Length: 173
Image (cartoon, rainbow, N blue to C red; front, side, top):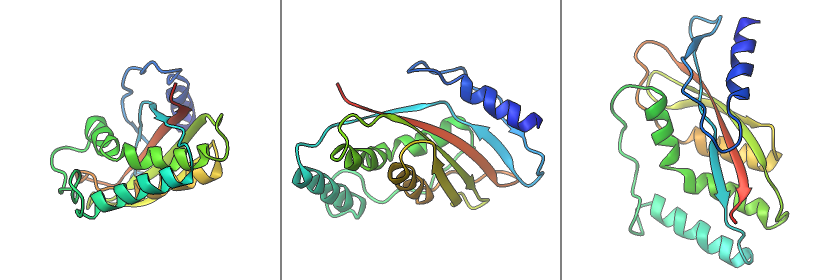
């Protein structure tokens, strides 16, 4: 019960585009998990003019990820402590992929806006064990969770860490 109140209070603290002050991680009732609720990440998606433009953007992103096209190559193995700043840095390095999840849906609904909350567990090897998204659009929720599943974080020091990360999506002005 206490854990639910802490999580609810942390989520309520993430209002609008203002960043709430960092919250202190709270231990869950399960000693094998460490719980951390992140500050809200605001993602503004461009409204693609058409599906060809979106397909081109996806192809460029895939080529960059594969190292075929200049820009982002394969991700280096993260180092350092696993804290909110390192989690945020790993996620922000892939915001373009998360933004793409949203932009695909903007083609169908140009006024789509809302918040996806992704919960994921970082194992002792720094890889994501499981990720689920909820609270917004089922397609965007699932796509963002799939992106998070592919990320690699610095290794936790003593036990797996469960993280809750909200992403607020809105069309770019």
